[in-house]
Every structure is written in C-alpha cells, then in structure tokens.
Image 1 (cartoon, rainbow, N blue to C red):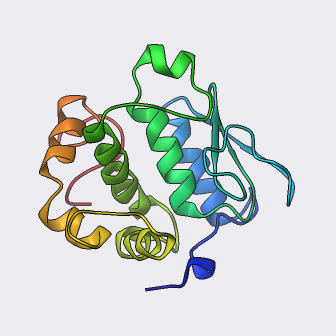
Image 2 (cartoon, rainbow, N blue to C red; image 1 turned 135 degrees about the horizontal axis):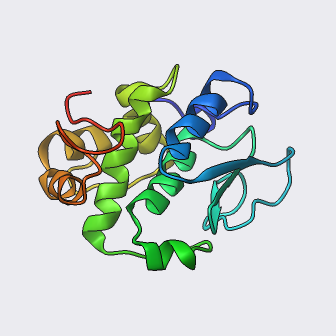
Length: 169
C-alpha cells in the first residue's frame, strides 16, 4: 500500500490522467477545471489538494489525488438534478449513495492510465478511507452489493447500463 504522500496525482491537464478524467466526466456533463499550484480549490470539502465541486465544475490542481477527483466527480454523477443544480462543496446524499460513489470511482479508475482498480483501492486505503471490513479492496469484493444495486438501478453501471462503468471491467 502506498503512503498517503505517494498516492497517484492528476498531474497536468494535458497529461494522461488529466485527459482521462476530463473524458470520463464529460460523458456525464461535468467539466473539469484546473487551478495553478497552491491555489485554493473552490468547493473542496476537505481543503488542501482535494477536489472541489461547484455547479457543473470539478475543481482540481495537478497535485489533486486521482481518488479525490474520481470521488467528487462521482458524487456529481450520482446526484439527482435538483442536487446538481445546487451543488457546492457538500454533495449530500444517503449512506448507500456514498457507497455507490466509492464503487463507481473504483470502476471508472480502470479508464485512467496508470491507475486501475487495484491502484485506486490501495490509494483509498493509504488516504484513510474507512470501510467496514478494514480495507477498500475487501469492501469492494465482499460487502458492496448494495452500492452495485444502487448504481444499476439508476443506470450508472451494469452489463447493459449507461455510461462507461461495468462491473467486470
């Protein structure tokens, strides 16, 4: 498991991770806005380098962790239209939706060069995400059926689901 300071970062907007994140979220109508180093990130729930959400923009910097950009972007994807319209910092939602956000992030990580499922799971653990079974991997593999059903029910995942998330990806 990487140390918290060794998690995968987005890098520059024109880099592989930056391009992939823009493509992923553009499919859902969410734009990605890059800020200069050390700039305060608008809409960041956790502050520092963590991604922020304001309206239809996901705010990031080159040092924003990939897991943070995916997580906040997936909050926007999972939100209903009313919450999207008022989105600023705290995405809200239910406990099962929070789990669905994590699950969707893990699925979408497969579409980011140099990331993938296993790297994202390790980075989530290194950063301090908390799961009932003690690790992101164990939660994803053994305890996330409710999150999967939530995503399938809303057409965000599944063998025939909308978007680019597939359980077997």
